[in-house]
Length: 122
Image 1: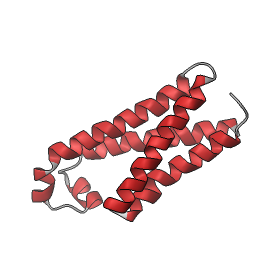
Image 2 (image 1 turned 45 degrees about the horizontal axis):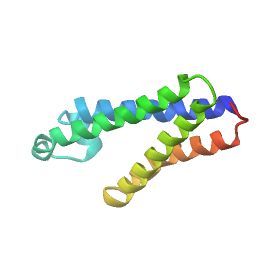
Image 3 (image 1 turned 120 degrees about the vertical axis):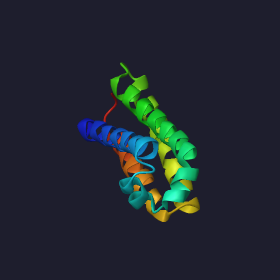
Image 4 (image 1 turned 60 degrees about the horizontal axis):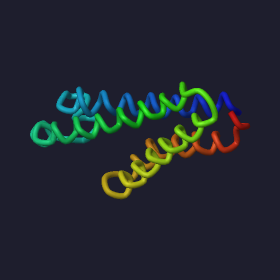
C-alpha cells in the first residue's frame, strides 16, 4: 500500500505541474482556449491572473514532491498537508468555477490521502 500511496502523491504532483504548464504557457493558445473554454479576448485579459494561478499549482506540486523525497517520518505529514491543500482548492474551484474541477483536482488528492492513511507507517 505504501507504493500505491506514493504513486498517488506523484500523480497529483504531476497533475499540478501540468496545470502550471497549461495556465502559465498555454493559456492564450488554441489548446488553452479550448481546455478552459475561453475566448481569445478573455484569455488575453486574464493572462496574468492565470499565470499566477499556475504558479500556485506549481507550489502545490513542489510541496508534494518535497514530501516524497523528504527523509524520515515527517514525509507523510508533508504529503498529507499538501494533499489537503489540493483537496480544499479543488472543492473551492468546483463550487465557484466548474464542478468538474472538484473531480479532476480534489478527487485524485482525496484518493492519495486515503492511500496514505491506509499505508503502514513510513
